[in-house]
Amino acid sequence: MEEKTVGILSGLVSYLFWGVLGLFWALLSFVPALDILAYRFVFSLVFMAIILTIQKNWRAFFKSVASLWKSKKIIWVILASFLIAVNWGTYIYMVGHGQATEASLGYYIMPLFNVVIALVFFKEPLTKTSFLAILLAAIGVVWFTIQTGSLPLNTLILATAFCLYGVIKKKIELPASFSLMLETIVCVPFGIVYLLFFTQVSFFSYSPLTIGLLVLSGVVTAVPLLLFTVAAKTVDFVTLSFIQYVNPTMQLLVAVFFLHEAFDPHKWIVFAFIWLGIAIFTVGTIHEYRQVMFQKVK
Image: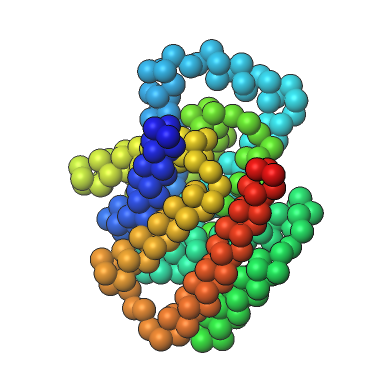
């Protein structure tokens, strides 16, 4: 019970952290999104190197890398690195361009995207409640497209990239610190090349406060991910499913009340469809979970 309590608290803190992270990126809205992404790679690597040094885990880390290379699973790590870079970059861009509300929408529909991916990649059966939830989410996206005159590509990219990232992570069993370290190692060379040859503003031309925030970007990337790993290992699926909605809910509240983004009637309609879909999906998930547990007891 004590272990589960720690897991639930870790999950809540990680999702609250992710939920308010939009405020952090908003402070850097004047810095180009690609620059922030590149600095995020660099300083995530620095922070994770410090973590591995403190844990004295370098030997185990290199052993894991050698094993991945030998089994050719390193290809999946490279692909995972690309997907998480797309997710991070898209989110930073959206917050910096007044689209934090749409970003929260992406994280709301993410569990429903997981169902679609499970159907396509793992041939898992689609339940009636899952089908209805996905249909309602699709109606919400179509309504958004009709009202704005354009498909919410950034929202869909955000959700799709992270869902596919999750699929790949299932193929590679690594501790969170090793996984994040390896993914940043893959991405850092691209970040360094960009910062050396393509950025328009040098690092030290920013104010001390901005430099401090850019350095801190590595910490705010790693800490919630490490906390989430603790939760994922100790908390059951249903509980974790409920906790995960803290993230987009916090993002939405931050977008409306702190970043002062408009939440006009057509957005209410879009979110109403999404929320109804989530409610149906959650009820269906709980029902299925109870049935499984009941059969186990029998």
